[in-house]
Image 1 (tube, rainbow, N blue to C red):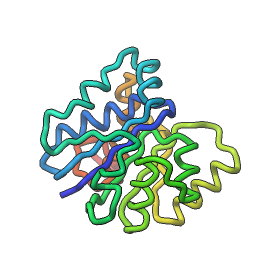
Image 2 (cartoon, helix red, strand yellow):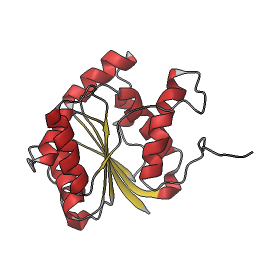
Image 3 (cartoon, one colour):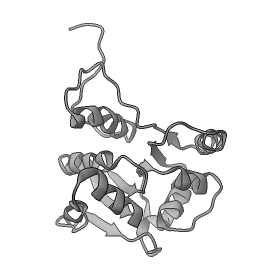
Image 4 (cartoon, rainbow, N blue to C red):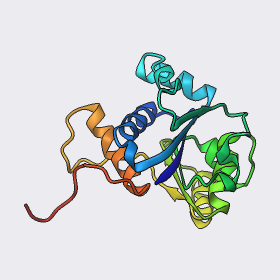
Amino acid sequence: MHKIVLAITGASGSIYARQLIEKLMTIPTQWKELAIVMTDNAKQVWETELGDASYNNYLTPKDPALSVWTTKDFTAPFASGSGQFNTMIIAPCSMGTLGRIATGISTDLITRAADVILKERRKLICVLRDTPYNLVHIRNMETVTLAGGIICPATPSYYSKPTTLEEVAATVTDRVLDLAGLDIKTFRWSSGP
């Protein structure tokens, strides 16, 4: 059973965070705990991009296996390796967050949790949305990759022929859930019928 941290930072791409929460809630038998951490900037971007403050619906836990943490609450169980959270998804992941992770600067709960996940050799998935990349970004991606993290740019695929914005975003979120080791129903590339 997965124990998952979903961190939401202030990069563009709130649709990915919303879809990940919604999809995780449809497969509750595949995870034991789901913890959510959302920055203040992420809330502002969510309101701008999605036109509402619907993140409040997700930040009021109705399921005892779901918990919500502030970025300054280092009492969260996933702030320590002994909490045994085995997967962390940062979606969207700002380049500032990536840079702090790459340099080991744990200034908030998100960067501390990422540091813990990496030191424990567990799964860290950073869903980057910014483009283009500069050399600092590329080197930070390299550093996190060499430390065991997975860099998953929010680059949609089109071979499933998505027709809505939600379907385009799902090509990214489904890939992230695959990388996390969750069993989901999604379009799969196939050479045959």
